[in-house]
Amino acid sequence: MPKNVLTYKCLIISPSDVTPERNAVESAIEEWNKTSGRTMDVRIECVRWEKDAQPGLSEAPQDAINRQLVDDSDMGIAIFWSRLGTPTKTHPSGSVEEIERLLAKKSNIMPYMCERNVPKAKIDPEQIAAVRRVEADFQKRGLLGTFKNPNDLAAKIRHDLTGFMMSLKARTHPLAPVAPVSTAEVAPVPNIRVQIYHMELIGGGEREPALFIKVENHSPGNFYFSGISIEMSDSMSLAFTRDISGQVVVYPPLIESANSFELRISGRDLVEALGDREPLHAVATDKISRTYKSEPGKLQELVDGIRRDLALATIEKASDPTKRPSRRR
Image (tube, rainbow, N blue to C red; front, top):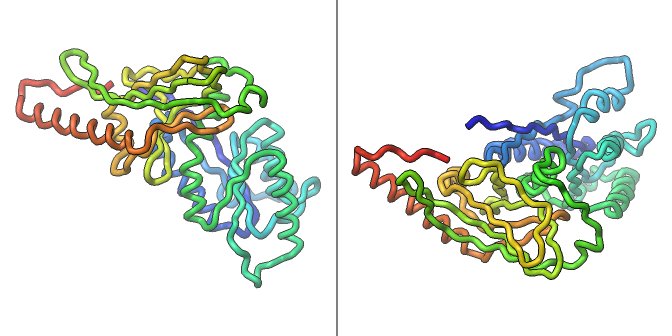
């Protein structure tokens, strides 16, 4: 079945002191595209001024970057360490202007601050003070990620992207109405249980292993639901946009008290997406990115069972030449 893959342009925002981190972010996104992005029918296109901006003398550099790149981007990943950058006509730096310009058009930003010590030779007190002022401002407006080195940042990007993109996709291409969420509605941590089990579905005389993920709301109030993903051992996550029948998954905007939502994933698709990696948890995410996980060790046990079932089915087909191969669903 042909898939409609959604492409989102991601602007990598930073001053000049984090070039290795910029490269790490791009590599992490490329890896995410090949794994989680494939299961979500989503692709992220990296946008970097040093690669994508066209040279010219008709306007100021930041104005050109804004017109060519910022205004055409759907999201941004911002990285800061020891420098804020050069002030523009209207903002403390070009990076800050890019962030504010994206936020003004309701685009999402993933901000990360480096915790690594700054070598004495690179210390510029004015720049460090400027970074701290912006960091304090951002902390009042949302949540900041932190990292210690490029590898640490890449691992966190791979981990954070799935939930971020699930929310972005739901907002830009909604398949169900999204209920408004107020602080009063989400202040208490709800009692959510993520149950998982493995079954074989039989259709057309053939068996199809499936993973069932059931999100149960044991709270007295509504659970404002965002989606389901699979957390893996390499800090990445998988999110499936199609169920075992090939239908697009439509997550409800909320799960009422004493109700549940169940997702059925093809065991074949799951094993293929995992590759050599091991699963850790099935994860439910709410509208403010809080996570609720399945029992530790349970998902690994179920996936091992699915792998055994698939291996046994392959042996059975090889020993019976009259059997037609199973159709993928």
